[in-house]
Amino acid sequence: MADLGYPDAVVRATDAGFQAAIAEVREAGLNIMMSMKGDGKPVSFIEDCADLADYTERLNDVFARHGTKGTWYAHASVGCLHVRPVLNMKDGEDVRKMRAIAEECFALVREYKGSHSGEHGDGIVRSEFNETMFGPRIARAFEEVKDAFDPAALLNPGRVVRAPRMDDRTLFRYAPGYAADAAITPVLDWSEYPGPLGGLLSAVEMCNNNGTCRKFDANVMCPSYRATRDEQHLTRGRANTLRLALTGQLPGALASDEVAEAVKLCVSCKGCKRECPTGVDMARMKIEVLAARARTHGIGWRDRIVATLPRWARWASLLPPLANARDSIPGVARLSESLIGIAAERALPRFVWNAFHDAELRAPDGRAREVILLPDAFNRYFEPDNLRAAIRVLRAAGYDPAVARPPRGMRPLDEGRTLLAAGLVDQARAEARRTLDVLSAWSSPVIGIEPSSLTTLRDEFLALLPGEPARALAARAFLLSEFLDREKAVLPLKPLPGEAHIHGHCHQKAFGAFPPAVALLRRIPGLTVTPIASSCCGMAGAFGYQAETLGASKAMAELSLLPAVRAAAPTAFIVADGTSCRHQIADLAGREALHSVRLLERALS
Image (cartoon, rainbow, N blue to C red; front, side, top):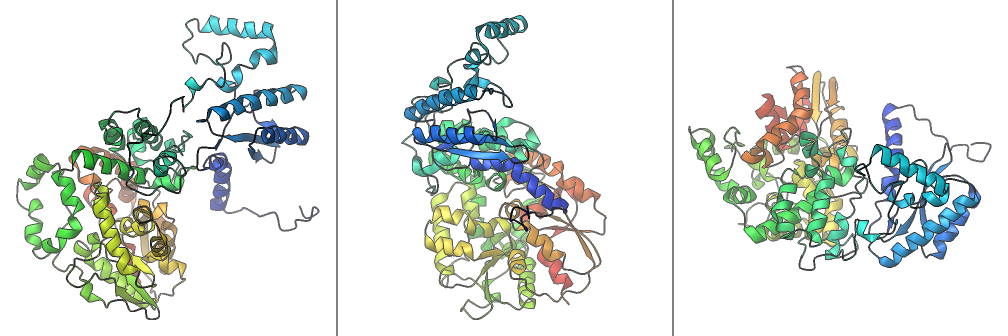
């Protein structure tokens, strides 16, 4: 490479993690190309080819004559090129272009004495050209072999022999007449995806059936499939169900029982948002389903209680023994299961006397080194010492924390996470507006410690309140460990000998915030930090408390998280930044899990 004028072009990859990342680019490259937004997509019907410059140039000319261009993706080492012209398979004119391009490409292949089919087989798109390629005598021989072994034509009929036309639209995913159901009105903003229903249909159609969500070596995706091995409970299966619902092929559309069953075990982990090569955001799509169900069927008492927890929790925290009575009075837990479906064997989070109050910190004023702490309802009322530890850690790092406060006399700010989980989108939007209005008055970084709550500012706020104010807030909203690592903040840490096994919350992983949490703990002298290789813990907010999903919740936890926790030494720290994760570990493994900020607080000198 140096002889060619690129002396620094070769990068040594000696680290195992770096090598794995490079391999992932190779594996994901083709699907990344398929992540183009809109109806035009790279369409696969031309066989891979050797890097023959004259052929590729002429093929580009073919594309240009038909008003399109191809996407090219290569195995540079062996000179093998993948080529896919960009076409809209919903458009009859583009289907005709596909036919013309296929015929002209086939003519080129024959001219170069090549093969029209090879690495990827014949399928529907190339089988009809077999007789022209091989001649009638060999084509009849193919048919004889097929008939001898499969006389009833049960095994993959229509491939290799007696094939249909490759442009027969009745066989397409988007058959003639395929169109969005105009009666559907999305409740979230999907404008980043061009297309009908405000972009919602295009977002669903981003799923190209590549099947990455079926893999078990992905980071998080897809916990429900890992637990059930059922295609229905998979990102791909859900996307296909939603596509049918949005195009009038399922009675009841998004509010139908079929769609509800498809998303029933979706824990909104957002793993697909990050790990799916085409970025299918099933967690956001589930909100649309829940909203449609809520509009059509209403919501039950259990969902309403959970959804409004941030509103009534401040009153419950005034008398914790009464608020916690469900788990202390014999028979009440069983009654709660029979009446509203909260699993009797689950202990609920416990209210404490010393709930966090906004008055414990000053109000923002924009001073130097200011950071604005945004307390979430879960830590505020159930584990307030986590918030107090965050204040001490921020101060030790040289920052001046303040707390975002609502106008006098109003309830504390809330991001609306629990409301979204029940499909109460209008109420969630009102909460988001209230929080955005207060936080927009200042430009200081906004810090949270609960991943599902803080990342709502960076994700759902953009879909609830599209515009510059929400984008500006998203750009300065961080989890505490993420912020301290990003700012390279100096912490006065003393040795804390021992081991810590840390489980990443799904939303931490989805937004790339888990590595900073690990890196920050690794600053503690004497502490050996081991990330737990795990998917979703299975608690996922209220999911693990619901009687009907309790079994799935346990199954998800048993996949990798609980075995790792049980294998950890009794003296080791178990760390999890998600409230749900800590409760799942305590319930099913009998181990106390700490928020990472509590470990940092212990190590402050």
